[in-house]
Image 1: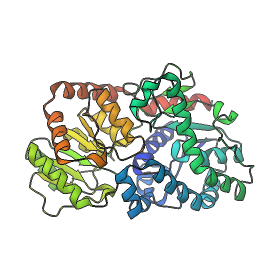
Image 2: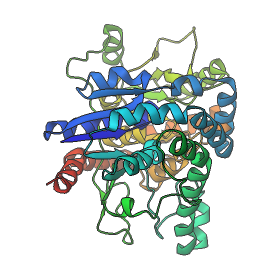
Image 3: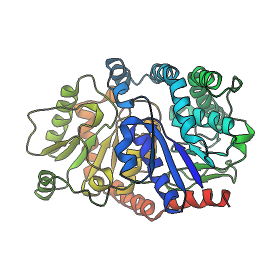
Length: 420
């Protein structure tokens, strides 16, 4: 039986679906992963059929305009840019993905592939499963992930409405691209103005959520067909070994903190690096800094700081005392699983939601929005993460709970029941 998973976005958006695909492959399915060209290595190295589509998210995020908007946290402007890029590539994506999906028995996608996935499923008349990394099903228990927590005081009815607003913000931004693909490639009628959220195709099958019930318990107003399975972790390859310089750094001192902002770009990476180094100096802490896509640079690093382009989180986070990051869903999950305190510096989107969640659970400091990040605020958070024994204990307990979960296996079990 053949399953196609569509996963578009940054590495953090794609990696959990590689893990899910691996689990499905172990269960006997033939799995294709439709994603961007620049993720060939991660897909191929984990034994899945790599199905590349045009475009490179890293290149888009590295533009000067995107760097400026990321620092401002302007979600609406960022959505406009990504929607414009999606419209530019809509026809090409549809043509490429249609070829990969012919003969599939199931299509699976989260937010990154939701709209093109639904249209492809309609064209090919195959079942479609939603598989998300962030809450997307309306609930009265908390507000939509892009809304400030303070708005929850407006009550349960607003919370439910806010999720529908999130859905519409996403759909209306990408509606033009979707309809372009439906018209020019798939020969389908235009989608409804409010989207396909109420379509029979979506209602016919379960919704999978790849996060931990210890972090977000399943809301009581979600139906039995909505499943919180646990995280879908992709561990580092068995043959991965750290550079000798990194091993030496870790062995010759106290556990460092991790600092990295993943795919979130900075217009002035040197200034950001200086801010971080000042905070580390004030708190007398060592650090491993990952430049990632953000291009953090500082050529005069002290001996107490090690900088690298990339290190698997699953390997590194077990060896640090705290994690400082942007609050992407994948990095947040890895920090929680490691059982160390989190200091989240959100840039935009759902990152503030995860920052608030870490603080609410008592496993992290209050989030510091990127545009409000200062040496003083970062130093204070580093001190709290290092010295607050209750926070460290709660983080360790949460990590133990998450490590005991079997998120991929739970998700695969649900899919297997559907394909009997």
